[in-house]
Length: 365
Image (tube, rainbow, N blue to C red; front, side, top):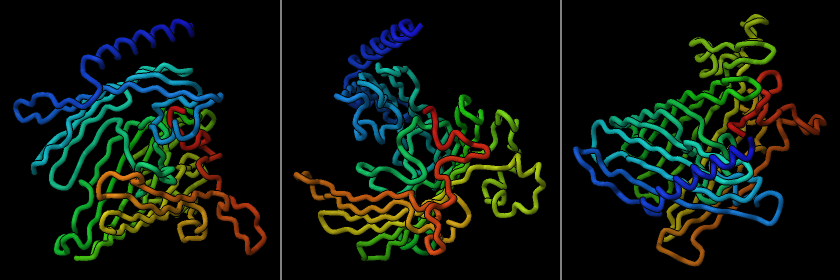
């Protein structure tokens, strides 16, 4: 059966490769008719190998799960994207990407498939789409403390602003952006068909005639609902969604019966996200600090040492031998420990949830 599966995957990859050769290896805008806009087609062949049992970390990190870390890889990605037009009013965008990969865990899968609507400053997105959450250096960073770029994007429906939207009457001095999403995790996990809740809210302060911008925001993720192998179906009503969204399931637990508490144990994580941008002429500076939260106590900065620090420079004045520099420090070792009272380790259990969601923060991995 394993040989047959490998044969089918290899044939599919060859077929995809032939299509890729016909399309060409780079973006090629298709003819637009009826105001459809440019359809961007792209075919990308890739291969990666190493001398050890597993690939080096930086060859697989931040690849959205497209590279198999357990062996050498050879594959093809075919994509078609229609971006938003540069005109105001109601507009749409869509995208699809098929991945064929020959490796120890070979696959042919739809990596991205989504549709989007935009009107004014709002966007509605549905489907599976690569996404960056948190303000970090997008090309060199380890990634945000709550949401990495190491897994296949899960399907979501989200409502968000079109980037930062200026606050009326204040011009560009103060802007805000928001994001609210409902997602679905895979069936094959400890709690089957777990639901995913996400939201974020950011503010940007950019004083006039000053080359500095300050960003401050909060991002929240929660696993809820689904079917536990021993406890059965977890609460997934509209009221439960409201409890998860507004933290009332963890802030006001004394009002719940024992039975309600057993069926309402969402797995929450969050972060405070602060960053500073400075325009230095031919360079741009970026400094950021993300505070990780696993429980209510850490929301009041009791666990200030855990999280992510970052500082970097990026050249904006054209090509150079060195175009970007980045320093990052990531720590999750204190976990709310109170050293002043002799605690060596804290009670936080980062990225897992022993009572219910034991699968942790994973997706198809």
